[in-house]
Image (cartoon, rainbow, N blue to C red; front, side, top):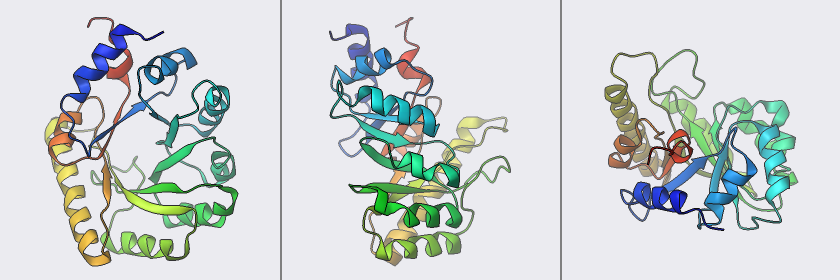
Length: 227
């Protein structure tokens, strides 16, 4: 049964999106019924930040939600790669933050039976607690790694705004603009058309304005009792 409150909220959020901008609903800690509620009204892309929770949910929902597309958005440890590649309908990995992790993914790509997109995480805020690439040369090295890949492909770049700042919106704007500039440079050098994964519940409208292609929204998609 379609949930009218979720449908109204989804349509309200999507009214600001252009055709090349996609909503990735972050379903971490959410129940299977909550995920089904959005699936039943037509949404297909969901993100999780822990491999074990993602694997469990993908197994539980593969029959009732056959068209669901899963995205890994949290920090990924190298020793979890084999489990991640067991996820039914894995669509993309948004949090590839090092050459070491990328090499582990490539080493295990034979475990996949379909193509999976990779987003290289870039630490635009330079906050120490955040992982990610921090220089153009590092990104160039990573991009070259995809030349011989069969089941993994470079889909884009990912970033997050700074958290430990007085003005988070100002920081988000600076971070998103930096990633957009990196995309332009890398597209030109490598002949690419990279997508951008950036923007969360608190700053997604800034990300939309800065050309984000994938917006990772969680809290605002489920905590809608006041709508």
